[in-house]
Every structure is written in C-alpha cells, then in structure tokens.
Image 1 (cartoon, rainbow, N blue to C red):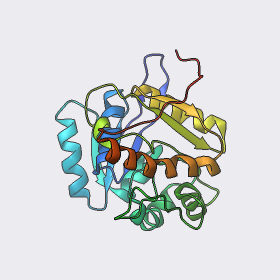
Image 2 (image 1 turned 135 degrees about the vertical axis):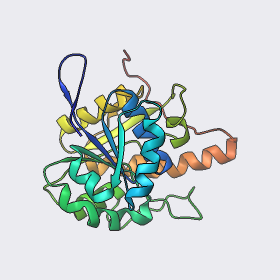
Image 3 (image 1 turned 30 degrees about the horizontal axis):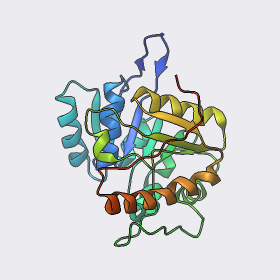
Length: 227
C-alpha cells in the first residue's frame, strides 16, 4: 500500500492497526482513513481483518486487511489496539516487524470484572511494559486511552482531550497531528512514564460513566489556548 499525500504535498504514512477489528482499532481506522490516511487493519487471522476492512472500504475509505504480522510489517506507523490481557503475546508476535518504527500503544491495564478499579502492572504502566518488551529500537508513544471507542465509530464530534506520552517530543507531535486530523484535541503530556496517569484515569472514567449514567465521559485540560 503506497503512501497517501496531504494537501500541502507531504507524504502521509501508511498506518497499521494491530487488533484493528475491535471497537477502538476500527474506530481509529475509520476516522484516520476518512482523514486521508491509508490504513491496514490487522488481526490474528487475515480473514477477520479483511472482513472488517471490506466494510470500511465499501464506504469509500482507503482500508485493507491482513494478519497482524503482515500489517505490522507494512505499516510505517503502527497502532497497538489490543486488550491488556493480549498485549504481551501480540507484541511478541509483531515485535520483529517494529524496529525503527513509531508505535502508538493505546493499551489500558483493565482487569475484569472490576474494570472501574485501577490495577497497574509491575512495570507501573502498560506503556512501560510495552517499551520493555519491544526494546529501545522501537519509538513508543502512548495515547488515546480516554476516548470512548463507540464515539470514534460514530460521526459526531468528540468533546475530549487526548493525552500523549512519549520520551521524544517530535514523536509526540506526530501523534498529536494524527489526533488533530480526526477532530480531537491532543496535549503533550510528558514522558512515557507519565502514561500511568491516563491509564489509571480510564478506570476512573468507567466508574464515572456507571455512577452518573453517562455515555462515555471524557477529560478536558483547562487553561490552554485553543485554536
């Protein structure tokens, strides 16, 4: 799949969505493809990924499907959109394809059935666990934790900030530009170690949704100058 072009003449990277048949992955794929990015949806089985991709392609979106390893190999920027329970196994599977690439990890360490209770891993966060498993050859950024997946799959505007964590500000900026392209506000939130805050906040938001009977509470950072 070739790179697409933005209106200013720059190349848009091909995006791979590992675990892209789930609600978050498919929602991000839909919005990013609608913004003009070529997206490869990955799944453990190519047939499942191809079926999801076919539904999006029928809407005129530049989306194809492949198994996770192939998607990781072909993607220039790779999203990890899998449950915490699958993260380690999936990273071990696709890791050899990721050296030198920017990887955007969206994993939140939710532990059923008490997903409204914060449960952090031994590494302190899912992002640090991913970086440890993938090694220093991978440029890891953590983001999109606090955005309701069903809202990404809808067409309405989303009233939510995206907190973006990573050790390289240039990599964070690229992810902020991706978030902006799909209509979200995004904020530099510091190094990868800070991802623990957004990951833990996801459980808090789940509890807020239940207690207040709301449809996907989000967060806003106040005091910023907005365009």
